[in-house]
Every structure is written in structure tokens, then in C-alpha cells.
Image 1 (cartoon, one colour):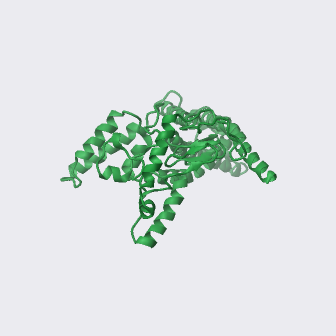
Image 2 (cartoon, rainbow, N blue to C red):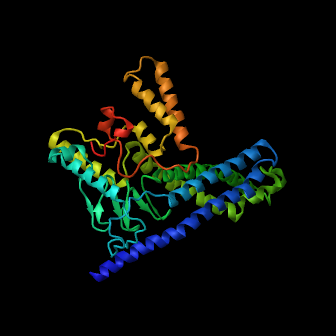
Image 3 (cartoon, helix red, strand yellow):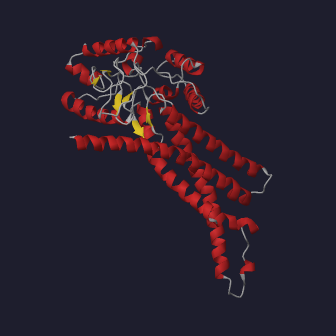
Length: 386
């Protein structure tokens, strides 16, 4: 038993140390690729001082800033309710080193939420709840909030835990999930551009050099082949450019998988942990009742996106939600439909694109549910369970 406990503690320690190494490594990788592109690629494929030269350098700075900003925010911010009233609880279960203790008001609210969920019978719990209404954490010594799970690496319960990411050395939760998703979006787009544009120039220059070598001893001579990028073209085939292409190409392929899983979780308002629970409930509920199960937190793709990115008191989001509540379910004309789609696109751009340090619009205990939206409850009357 002691050997098993020692192995688990070593794994948790290794995960934490990996995060400390991954953070500076990721920052250095982004800076290296941006530096190589700006120094060795852009001055060769464009004329310095022209619009294309400044535009490509602007793109490099723009994507690098957004990648680093969201990466640092994802590794820095988190949402924790704290441990129980007994501080200093430790042990092998999670190498707990708590820094905060949940307030009496938080503990009382968790009790109220659990008692509210216990009012449902067994059938209603299977149909209308995502997890058991009363879950107790033996490490944090308190009740767990809805959608809250204990992370053995961080050693504390995490609000709306998605997974523990060793690359940001932090749990992806309700607070930094938006930063993590934007990080992989900007990283995916940035690596795609940083791979295709320099990659095309690299292949063009390599083909030119191969033709020169083939014609070196022929009658025509290498002078008959026109250099695509002039005398500076040799910079495109240097080792730093090749290494940057390998890095960006590999990262882009990996980001495709992350974008798929992250986009699916965002559109369904679930986490990686909840996705497995929802899949099991869909199969079980349908086999036993012939009814389709829907996660209580799934508000529809549009609202799910807003719930991830919205911040407290956002006037644009509040105005648009009020307008949609006043809009009939069936739009009367195509113009109304176009206006609705356009407003939604602008709202997503408003809440997702500008960098912000404002906290997420969730306290870690209360989340809007599909049933509460159908009943038309106000934002202040959100229910934790449906």
C-alpha cells in the first residue's frame, strides 16, 4: 500500500514539475517561431518598406500576442471555492496544500444546493440531474458544488473541471476555460499561417536549388534558371527556418484534435468529464424510458458559446439576450433572420476577440439550466439543478 501511495505522489509531483518546464518552453517556442519568420522569411518574400512587409509583420505580432496572452491567463487564473473548515488537511489523496478555506456562506450554500437536489426522486434525478446532488470530498472535507470535481494534481476541488493540463500547469475550469480555448484557436490559426506561407517559400527555393544543381554540368548552365527570391533566397533554406516549419506543422496537426474536442465541449456546454457522463446517461435513459436525455446545462449552441465567454454586467450580451426573449420563436421574414444571425456573430466577436482580464460570469456554484431558460427565469433566479 505504501509503495502504491508513493507511486501516486511521484506521478502528481512529476505532473507539476512538467508544468513548470512546459510553460517557459511554450513561451520560448512561440517567440522563436515568430522571430525566425520576421527575420529570415518576411524580408525575403516581400520588399522591406512595402505594405505586404508591414502587414505580414503585423500578423506575426498579432497572433503571437494573442497566443501568449491567453496562454499566460490560462496558466494563471482559476476558480476555487476552497477547502472545508479544517485547514492543513493533507495526505496521499492529492498532496493537498490548501491556501484558502471556504467561507461559512459558501458551505451553507452548498448544503442548500444539495438539499434542493435531494427533493427529487430516483427517476427525476436520472432524468434531470447530471451527477448526484450530494457529493462529499474526503480531501477538502466539504460538499462538492454542481460540476465540481477534485483534482489530485492541484490537491483541491475545481469548479466545472474539464481536465488538468500539464502544458499550462493548471486545471482548465470555469474561469480559464475561455482562455484555454482561445489559446488553441489562436495557436491553430497562427501555426497554419506560419507553416503555409514560409513553407511555400521554402519549397519554391528548394526546387530552384535542385534545378541549379541539375543544370550545373549541362550545356545551359545554372544562369538560365531564374532565382525566385533573388540572392537572399538562401535564407529560406537555413536550419532555423526548417526547424520552425517542423515545429509549426507538428503543432498545427495537434491543434486540430484540440480544436475538435474543445469546440464540441463549448457547443454542448460540457467538459471532458461530463461528456462521458452524458453519453452514459443518454444510452441508459433511452433504454429505460425511450426518452432522449439532455444535459441540464446544455442551453443550445448559441447560448453555450455566450456562457463560456461572458463577463459580469456585459451590456452587449444583456441587451441581446433581452432582445431574443422578446423575439417570437418563429421569425416572420428572412430579414429578421439575417439580423439575428448578424447580431449573434457580432456578439461572439465582442465577447471572444478582445483580450480581457475581467472574471467569468460564474461563481462556481450556480449555472443556468435549460429548464430555467424555458421557464423564462431572470438572471438573478438561476437554478443550480433543473
